[in-house]
Length: 172
Image 1 (cartoon, rainbow, N blue to C red):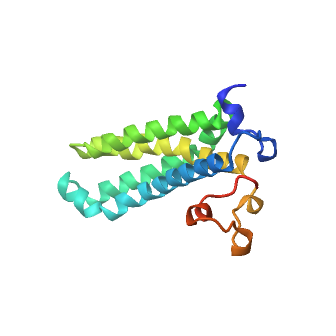
Image 2: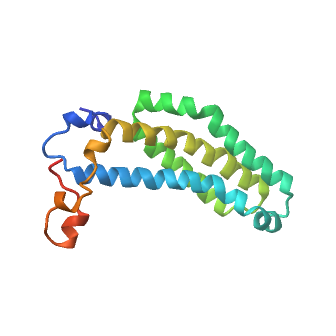
């Protein structure tokens, strides 16, 4: 069994030893990653004037960087999904997160607009191409949907401490 088999095992075939909490923790991590991808695409739009002043560039150049970031993701998203199918979705997620992190670091320390363009538009865009399809596939493969949600009615929950209400039942 290789490392990708567990992430691609249908929910009905998970072993008894796997806790529902660990699967929900994975969803929380994947949700955080998705939030970062969305946040990343809005940060540049919000910070146009600050970046323009700090790097002594024009609005058009920054809009071009934003456009290239979006085009990089749009043009290569299917390739990222296919690579995830070939080499493993979890591996693709990790690789994409590392690439995205390197791009973020380069963008953060960029002394010139050219470095910012390379870090944000190209490297972070390529990282997002690997991460976003992997997120969707990992969630879809590991969860069946509403039947796995925790109980919502008080009568369905245990009558223990408040922490037990927060902790989702492993019985479902």
